[in-house]
Image (tube, rainbow, N blue to C red; front, side, top):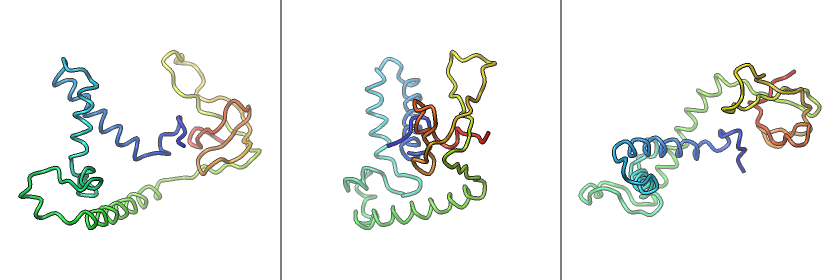
Length: 167
């Protein structure tokens, strides 16, 4: 499961959605008379046929083994099994490189049961400019996952650590 208030829990999905939405915006500008749901099908098909920057293979090739480009180029591509192995190796290497960069800057927020915290209020269009940015204090009841905590009152459950501040 992914917390609705903490999209980092499913980064790959969020990044894919961002790419698709950005491309869909461009398509809508290029072809404003075509319904967006038809353009969405085109965008997803283009995304699936485009080689990924890290893996160097398109999702359609890695999933189905069908190259998405001209046949004369396909003579130079590895077998599906080898392409998948290369994609995994490339992804792991890229992930490790990004982890090193992230870990240099990251300060973990580790709370324990009984800690008092303030909760960062999500922004809403009807929220006034002078409304408080934090609510609370709330008491942490238990740790659900490395980044999610159950807090008291009980109607506020499973909130991400990046929205909590020590009191």
